[in-house]
Structures are given as C-alpha cells and as structure tokens.
Amino acid sequence: QSVLTQPPSASGTPGQRVTISCSGSSSNIGSNTVNWFQHLPRTAPKLLIYSNNQRPSGVPDRFSGSKSGTSASLAISGLHSENEADYYCAAWDDSLNGVVFGGGTKLTVL
Amino acid sequence: QVQLVESGGGVVQPGRSLRLSCAASGFTFSDYGMHWVRQAPGKGLEWVAFISYDGSNENYGDSVKGRFTISRDNSKNTLYLQMHSLRAEDTAVYYCAKDFQVGWGDYWGQGTLVTVSS
Image (cartoon, rainbow over all chains, first blue to last red; front, side, top):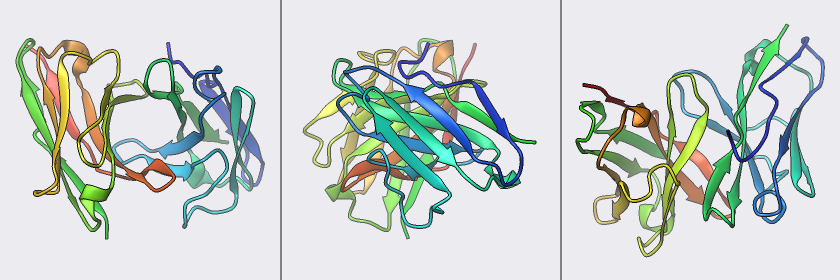
C-alpha cells in the first residue's frame, strides 16, 4: 500500500491527452513539492517534472504537472507510442521523514 | 557528463550482509545529497535512503531502518549502502540518484540487482 495513490493504469490513443492523478495528504503533497518520473523496464527512471510543474531541460512541453492541495497530476498531450511506460509521483513526507512514491501508473498507448 | 554507476549487487543468503557502491562522475559530488531507491520484481519504486551532501544527515525508509546504512566518501566520489540482516523482500534492483539545486532525481544510475535467496 503506497502512501501516494495513483491509478494502476491509464490509456489513450496516439495524439490524445491523458492525465494521471496522484493523491496524498497534508504531510506530503500538501506541504512539499511533487516529482514525476517515467520508468521503462530495465532502464534508469527519468525525471519528467520537479517542483510540481517544472520540466528539466530536454523534457518536451507535452509533459506538464500541476498540484492543488493534497493532489497532483501529470498531463501528457499528443500521445506517442514511445510514451508507453510506468509513471510515478513522489514527494517528501514530513511525518515519515522520507520520500514517498505513488504505486505507479502503467500507461498504454492503444 | 554526469554518470552514476552502481555495483556490488549479487545473490546473498537471508540474514547476510552486502554493500552497494555508486561511483559518481561528471559533477561535484560533494555538493549534492544522494538517494538510494529500489524496485522489487513486479513492484513499484520504493525510496530507501538519503544522505546530505556532507554526510551529516541521513534518512531511511521504514522498511530498512535499523538494517541499512547509507554513507559517502566525498574524496572517492562514491556513495554506499551497507545492508545487514537481508530478507527475501529486499530482493530488488537498487538505484542511486542525485539531488540538484531545487529537487532530486535528475540523474540516476542503471541499477544493481540484489537477490536474497537461500
């Protein structure tokens, strides 16, 4: 049972926009910033979004993040087949004194 | 370019110990905090531990607290994870990841596999 709650799966067709949610509490998302990572099997996770809505250089602007209260979301517009991956949210938790992850969302491009 | 290379994984019996290393290059290692994150087979990412840039502060996930110790040698640009009393549920790919000015996780290693089995 992950501290942050994500839907286990999401899907969309090429070109479509999909949104992945991440729900937490006042001790994590409510008081700290959110990161989003993309992870493909047997590769290093990739940072997509930091500080709720900032993209590292090299990450396309098709990826965007937002946060409201104790929830965050990742939006991917203009879906490509190469966007098929697992996506994770993460935030510092003040009560646990550590980073907590969501359980991950497997994105399928139909 | 930034590189993080983990090593030290392998097969170990339950109850034994293992030390992982993460060799860093391409940045000033002593300026940044570092993390260990793991992924068990078929499971999601799980944060394991953090150490501050100078080693003065450490934090651990509940599942490893008291058994694992994170450390660093800034003179060798190397991060470590000493793992004791290993359990089957510690079987995972272990990744190291670095902090940056306003966050963490901008660079990760490729991971090293630890298998705890008799």
